[in-house]
Amino acid sequence: MQILIHAGASKLPVGVTENGVWVVLIQNVAIPLTAKASPGVVSLLEYAQADLRQQLLKALERDALPKTLLDSFPRLEVIRPGLGWNRAYWQQKALDWLEDSDWTAVTDLLLLLETQGATQKIRHSARVKLNRGNFRNVKSL
Image (cartoon, rainbow, N blue to C red; front, side, top):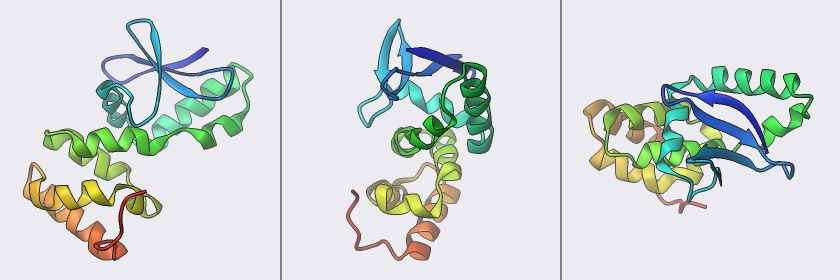
């Protein structure tokens, strides 16, 4: 495994395995960035998505790893915990990371935020994304 960056205020180690699996290192254990990853991955949301991508790209180049690895970075597995967090800060950060193509994969969480988001702004943002994408009858993948 190759640690590429130490991300966020918590300096969360983010890396990639020899098999191209993105991981975070928590208590010296490599945890794949999947739906079951540690809630600590929300600290990645502290970055603007473009800034994080740029840092990861520079690290891949520095370590002579294929730039194409960045294409497999599991953005949604970083976004999901943020949307499901009970704090306005993380919910808003996750909403900021969402792109139009992501909405179908997180419809269940957007529907929840529409009514139970921590602030009116978050509830409104979720409602706008749901309406714009016409995803009210779509089940998450």
